[in-house]
Structures are given as structure tokens and as C-alpha cells.
Amino acid sequence: MVLALLLDFANIAGGLLLAAVLLQRLPKVGSDLGLAARAAAPYGWLVGLVALVTAGYYLLVHLTDGPRVFHFEIVGLGVGVALLWDRLRGRSGPGRSPARTNGPPGATRTEPAVRAPTGAALLLAVFGIIAVIVGFQGLLTPDY
Image (cartoon, rainbow, N blue to C red; front, side, top):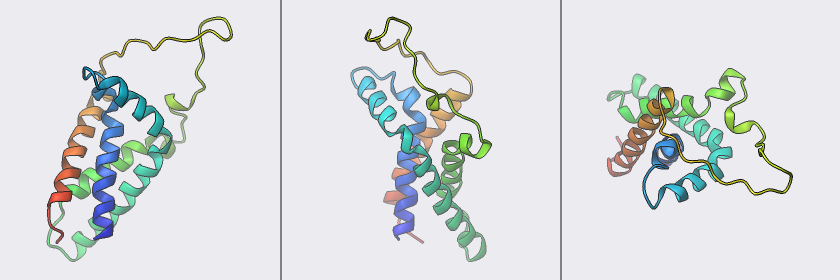
């Protein structure tokens, strides 16, 4: 029961972290969502680890005892791998490099315009929205 809740909340939180690039483009709430996503981004690896462990556990349980493999587990594995990808590959992601300002010291930097995601970023953002929907569906679905 508790592991199922952890999987659902990890799908929701991980999906929001993955979809933040796309959700920033929403009018009136996008800037706040972007700010929240930047604040939560350092803890994304923890959400990915919880998603990977709980989804892996339920995948093994449902493969051996049944009744069948559910889509919650597949999405949880995807969220976990997507959030842990840089750590799994041993590379430094773009969020880990120190920010530089293009001006004199002490100058304030204005936020750049939010660009539309393309390619892999768009694919991950759409997968993040799917993960949020699946996470909410998991909260409303009885445990088997």
C-alpha cells in the first residue's frame, strides 16, 4: 500500500519535473511553475530513485505472482531512468554547470524568454505529462 503510494507520487512529481519545460509556456502560471521546477530540480535524482525502485519492485511482483504487468510500473521505470539519466551515464547535465552572467559584476540578469522545447526535450516533456496523468490514475485505482 505504501509502496504503491510512493510509486504514484513519484510518477506525479517526476512527471512535473520532466514536463516543466513545456508547462512554463502556460500563461499566468508558467513563470511560477518554472520557478518551482528550478527549486525542485536538485532533488530530481531522489524522485527518480524512488520511482525506479518502487516500479522495479512492482514489476518483479507482478511478473512472478501476477495478475499482470500494469502500465504504472512501465511509466515509473521510464520516469526513474529519465530523471537519473545523467547520473547513470556519468555525465554532468546542463543544470549542474555554474550560471554565468554576461555583464559587469553585480549586474542583475533578466530572465531570458522561454523557448519552445524541440526534439528530445519535447518528447520528455510529453512523457512527463503522461506520467502525471498515470500517477493520478494510480491514486484513484484500487491496489491489486
